[in-house]
Image 1 (cartoon, rainbow, N blue to C red):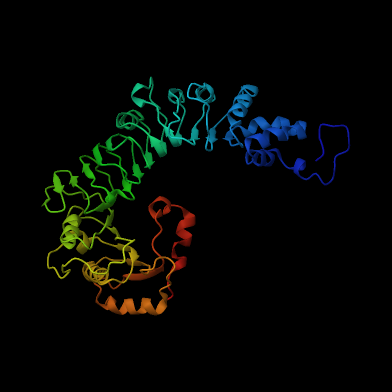
Image 2: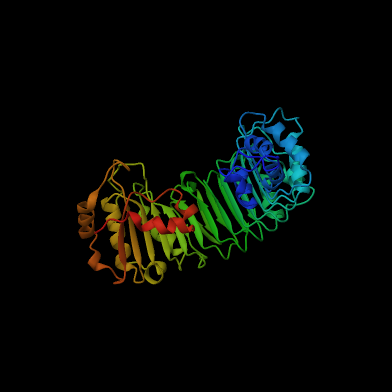
Length: 444
């Protein structure tokens, strides 16, 4: 590569140095930290551009010397702006090493807006200097221990999004984040440690999602909360209480394994249903239906009464089981359920195997839902993803489902190749996902 700061004539084949500065900065920012730093010896022009790559600082390098490299770069460019700072599987020296403490204080002075801190060991603790980053808007942390937010001198008033994966955090510290971060709108938690009880009191929170690896979720005061989503929340004996969330539109996954479901003054257990207050704001519900458990039909019918304006229903069942025999029960019931009769527009069977209980449930729903627009069957055989069911199987299911008896003549019945993806609710708002969603339909 030619040195555009040297005395020699430029090389006609040096296309990279002829690129605009914004393109060169993008190229440099995609390199590992050590590679980007070494590239500055190639040209005085590249040396001038390097500080601009720190705007989105990617602290990725081989080995443990990344700590020393970051220390050196920050010290060498004290005036460089840092908008976002990301690390990858960092391993710091012993906890008394001041490096990460100094990083965060330095980044706070540069007005950092996004932090992504990824460690190799959960015992590695994020220093309390995190709370000095008062300009921070987005925080992602993984495989570490979170500092005590109850002792923070000032709240992270600008923080709008928190994503925690494999993080140890105390219940008190999480509660302090929720109540003191007054701009917080999105909280995502997966594979958490220490925190078995989540107490939500937040004026600003809109979305709360995660794996559901907690024992109790108390939503005491969340006037702007719109979505509560725990992908595997039904796998624990969870106690869910929603005291005040007047804008809640999406809730899931609920299941018969829950110890208690409280919606306002209504108390809901596996065997006892005391319905006093309803939640008309809810538009989308995701459930796990334990069809081998006695009383599952009654549980389902009673649950829907809590949500009279429900429009979309996701139904997940024991996706790993090959059991075909459902518990005794009949879908031939005369009782009226307001959301089915007057509002239900979309039903999604996330894993449809063509079992008799699924067909009877589908027939009950499409026979009652006068405003149904679409019923989706995400088809998977008992052998799992490797089993291709084929169009002949789908046609047989269409006959068994008695689709001509549907209450809504406008309803469409869509059969998909394979189960609904596990992270559907995480990505369904992305345009790329919307474009590919219907690519796997059976052509029947």
